[in-house]
Length: 345
Image (cartoon, rainbow, N blue to C red; front, side, top):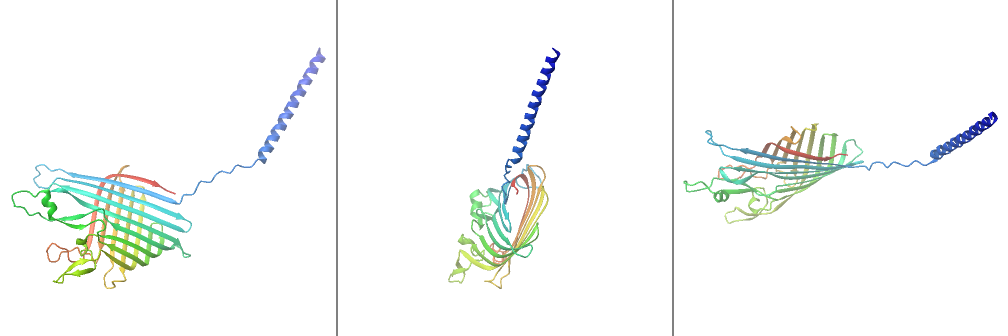
């Protein structure tokens, strides 16, 4: 009996040993197969060369007075703004695009009509390709500027003195100041772009062609269009609807991003027309401060300054008609709702 148990134990031990050897061989073969297997390549993320941003603002203001001793009028203001950019960068080439749209209305109890207090369309596109010189690129710059609709100056309506002017009286007393494509400025410049810092760029375009369009005939004299006909008294009676310009343009852009909540952008542009060498350059200077106070609320301060020697903005003889050049300036301080959509590389 003892010999039988010994035999069985020896047989079981041999069987286990054989199984263990087989398992070890199988594991070794599997490891060898895995080591010889080809590695599956991991797909690299697709490169993105665009950086897109859309910032929207809606601002509302209201004033209500009831038996207010100091006087005044009930007012309502509503304004909207869209500032969108789409920038492309790959290797030695950049292409930056920016569209700014502004529109605002004002209603005051002293005038039973809605007045426009803000209206602007501005699109700019910059292309650049690096030269062998550091921070310097060949460039092409296109810009377009106009407004959405008619803007008026309101005079005092003439009435019988006993009744308040009606809406019709106010409409009859107004004079148009600008409109869609009245004026419109279109420029294309070729030159060099210098970007010594990420926040600053200087574009010098000695070859810049431009067109100034004034579609409204009554505004062509105000915006310096060329006279095509005169009356018997020698006064101009007709003007060309457009003026071609060829000259040099210089643009300086700066943008300071303090953090995600506070930014300041500015652009100074000068254009000198070779075709009218005795006329002073046209100057525009735009500034914008954006301060995000909360998640969906922001304070915006913007200014626009224009000096165009061909545009009549001052009335020197007090007849109500502008007849002299001058500096144009506009400033807005706004608080309201803001929302930003952005996609960064």
